[in-house]
Image (cartoon, rainbow, N blue to C red):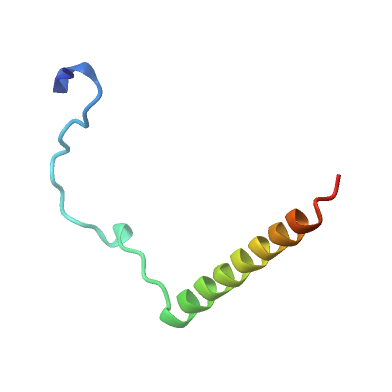
Length: 58
């Protein structure tokens, strides 16, 4: 059985206060647009794969 000293476990990190640089603020409309574009791109890729497999080009 592995013990915390074997290197397989994360060592506890001391808690620190959040700084302004630790926080990322994203515009909500830009985030929705990016997620929508990713979903469309993913759907197009799966469609392309389906067409390719349907015709089984050598």
